[in-house]
Length: 170
Image (tube, rainbow, N blue to C red; front, side, top):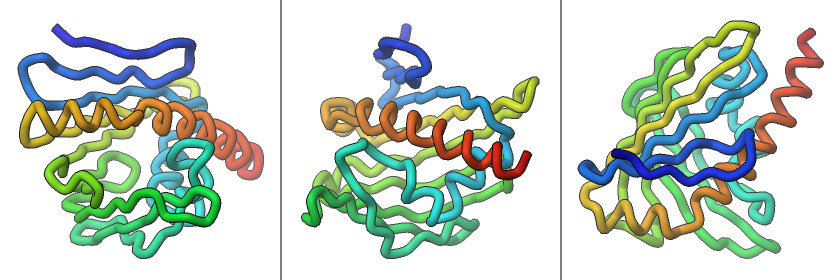
């Protein structure tokens, strides 16, 4: 049995499996899979949507390819508030990204993440993410961090970005 948190559409479905220390996130977008994927791998696009509205992003490294890495800092009012980093294990263009996700301020809560980009009819995309952490305590820390705000506000910003990209390419 899964527990879910969500409110009004089109918020992401966030599920925590009671038996395995995982978090599953599912969200659909009104944009082609190639654009949703591109918005995840191109740093100039990532900076425009990732995270909560109150936080900016300074990218130190963004090398999303098999064997690559990333590191960025969340910034509020010119002050660094959090640092994130990871190793990119596998990238299949327009289909899948497998990476680690680390948060310097919670060093024991490193997760292995898989994001799968599913093409849907009508030029839509379903993004499914699965994060696996070491233990339930680490997962509880993730869930208590307010991540759902960053996910939902970020995905709303991604909707706006994708609408602009779709219009520019159409």
